[in-house]
Each structure stands twice: as structure tokens, then as C-alpha cells.
Image (cartoon, rainbow, N blue to C red; front, top):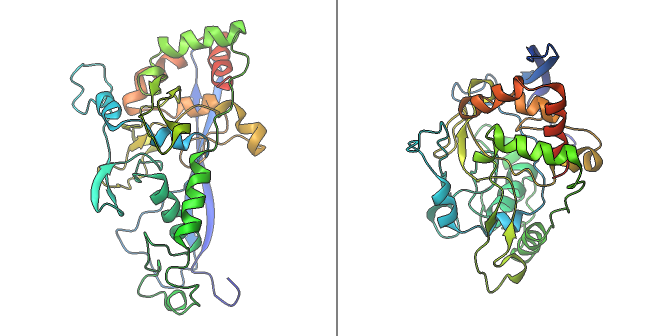
Length: 315
């Protein structure tokens, strides 16, 4: 911001370790850590948490929003009553419009209940633009320059624009799958199930009947997610809780479209902070409830791993 001294210089430091697969192949995993220097207002509060976030894909969001609540509730098994080691949980979060607690669907920890609120939160948190949902500037008491900055109105974002952005984000389509009949892709699909990936990355479900949104109404979808929170272990933990989500729990990321990541972005970065540079790295970071599936991948042959990746790249 012109004329405003930065509150800190942000740098990223990386720590790495090697994972040795059963056939002897070595894979380097790297973890980014945020380092703040030259803090303008003094040390951070002792309860402040820093956690990097990679912007997730925008495709199919309206279809994810249209999954019925009772479908997500049927997936949940918070006490692992079926003893399969998977205990997905719903994140109940605050809905600003209805002023009630609702099922969280969006964000890396399923912290937003609707696309409209997700968009409004991004306008405020990322851009400093207020809206009818979040009308207060995102300034802390010591941030005098933030509080005294020119205002674009109250709120700055009109309801009309927020609704149009929500309509746009709701209707971005999911790309068609590719190479589905190739033998390696078909073998990879079988391996995906054999190692248990499908237990969280669920394939098929049907959206609710929504008269006002026929484009999302009663459609069979294959997002490869259960939209639930799962404990992914200490390796991925950021120790930052959000509503019911603990510091080691994350929402199952949808996998549809993941095979086009490099084509769309020009590079590959996966997981909440972009640490994984390949799909195999992303798998090897899985721990906690996914530890058993991860170990099965570690024990695969190189051909099997390539088949599994080929399947993921077909999505």
C-alpha cells in the first residue's frame, strides 16, 4: 500500500525429509514455514497462529453446495463405529445470514457454510472490502493506518455485485475426464479403491432438488470428497482450530479436475499450503486416519504407483 510501512517482512523457510519407498525409490518431502521479520507493532500475540493457504480450485463449487445435508451426515462417523479407522466429522460453523450454526462446506477446514459467505469472507480478509455480511473493517486496535484509510462506502461491496460473484463461482463447470479407457488409468482406479482412498474421497452422490437452480438440481456428481473433517496427523497439522475442526483436521479436498493442475496453473502444488509438488508427494504427506492407505502406497511397485497417479491425472 503506497505510503504505508509493511507490518512485517514475510519469508518462507523450508524443512525437508526423505521417504524411502519399498522398492528403494527416495522421495523428498518439503514443508514451508512462515518467518516474520521486522514486526512493526512488536511481537505477535502468544495465541496468534500462522498458517499458509493455497487457493483451491474454483470448479464445481455450486454442485458441492447442493449436496444435501443428510447425505453429508450419512457419511459422518465421528466415533468410528464401523472400526475402519476412518472417523470423518462435520464442521458446524456460524452462518452470518441466518445467524445459525450450519454444516461447513468450503475452505480447507470446511469453515464456511455457503458460497456467498465464502466470497464475502474473501472480499474482507483478502482485499479489505466490506459487504452486507461482513460490514466491519478487518483492522486490529493497533492498526491505526488501517482504521484511518479511506472507505469505499458502507458497505463497500454492493449486494448486487456479491450476488453476481456468487452466481459466477457457483456455475464454474467441472472438466470432463480424460483417458478413462487407458489400461493404466483403469488399473489405477482399482488401486485407488484397494488402498482405501475412496473411503474419504467418495465418488458418487446426487445433489438436492433446487427449483431456483436447475443447473445444480438433482445431478449425479463424482467429486471424490465426503466434505468431512479428518485427522491427517501431525505432519500436516497447523495447530490452528476453526469451529469444531482441530489443528490437525482438514476437509477432504475434492479431486475432480486435479489432473489439469499443471495445465491450468503452469506448475503443481497440492495440499493446504502447496507443499506437495507432485501427486505422489501429496499422498505421502497423508497421516492420521490416512496412514494405513499411505503405507499401502509406500509398499507399491513403481508400476503400481504410476498407475495410481495416471488415474488421478485422468480426473
